Image 1 (cartoon, rainbow, N blue to C red):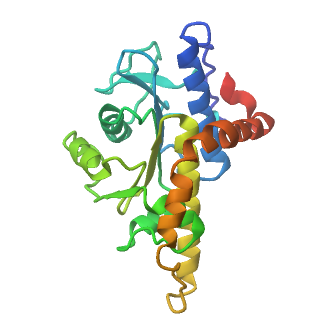
Image 2 (cartoon, helix red, strand yellow; image 1 turned 90 degrees about the horizontal axis):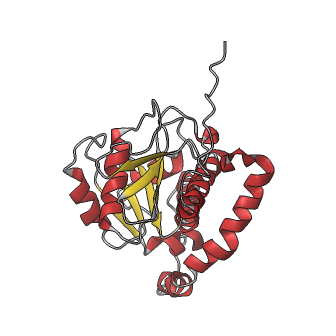
Length: 259
């Protein structure tokens, strides 16, 4: 027998238009992570701050696969991990809550947080030198990446302060021996940053698999040039071009995220 996902009544008429829009975007990001093959069964998290004065954010029900996430079955929690909406039987992973709540509380610009455990991201997280600026994609991400040493599965509230301190004002974090994380003012911005970071990690793993002899580092000053060229337009590129295009693709192949 196959376990069936219990349908969840739509919340569209029970939440503000701003919260519903955030729910739709976050559900879309979960589906896109699954579509790109970045999911790790149920074991990573994406979250988004709920617009409004309350310190609430949205996260997945731990029981659901990423391609099952909908706008309505996302769970709303507070910064202590307490469920604040009527999600009967909803399950929140404490490790996800600790990592995500730390960043949401410390960074006003971190309205969305994406954390992954992809093989390529984990591989780079285990490399002493971290992300190398040897490809154009890596150069786009390199200047905006911070690092946090592994402390075991995130169960201690005290790790919050160290995550925040290590990340500083960067938009991406490589959790050493663990995985990757990005933030954004919008879900679309966080997703585009993650796409770029993951592509850079994938290219690095392929590049190093061919051996270190003969690697061609970029000419001096070029990574800084790429930083200047891409640092400003990234938000607009995500919100106005990339994210709408990604939603169109998702509407063709997995439209249920809007439910």
